[in-house]
Image 1 (cartoon, one colour):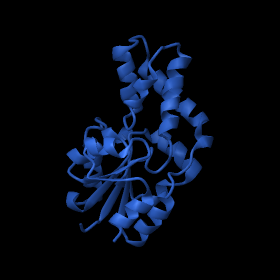
Image 2 (cartoon, rainbow, N blue to C red; image 1 turned 90 degrees about the horizontal axis):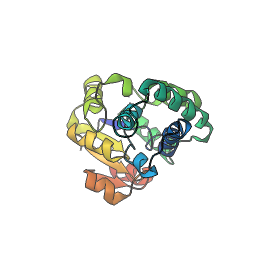
Image 3 (cartoon, rainbow, N blue to C red; image 1 turned 90 degrees about the vertical axis):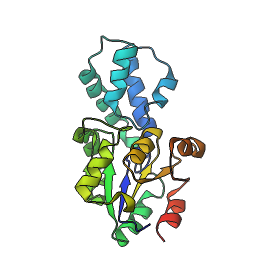
Length: 214
């Protein structure tokens, strides 16, 4: 394909943060004495925090204040930021992307607040021409809206755009948006990502670069 743009998810693709987000979500419930099954958290990899607390409200405890819980979660996630680092190989891959003059966009289900906090620590937003956060669309992954907005803002053609995702919900969003989707096995195994609809699956950025950047 004539590759012109690459859209990156953030958590699990740019930064190794999925486990920290899930931990912060779980700690928020524990802090408020809400019992839950740990397996429930796995279903929200790649989805917005608001969708998680909406699920809790509708299925576990309808007394919670969603906005208050979002603030608590943000504070807990911030307390874990010292553990954060880039996904292995990401920075080397981005150097190749920049040298090839390929447009890069960050498309995440995380809030603008979270992105700003992570950027303050890792200084990574400068690598992207476009940044789409949870605040930019009414519907989030697995809906295609974030990727459709990235296509609109970048002026990119679906046929020349690749999406890099690590989650089932992200892959579903990317495929409905009409783009080629590459799965990265940082959060789920290859079989799960392929079943979700990923066109290609890679275990590392080195493998991904060898395939895409030719």
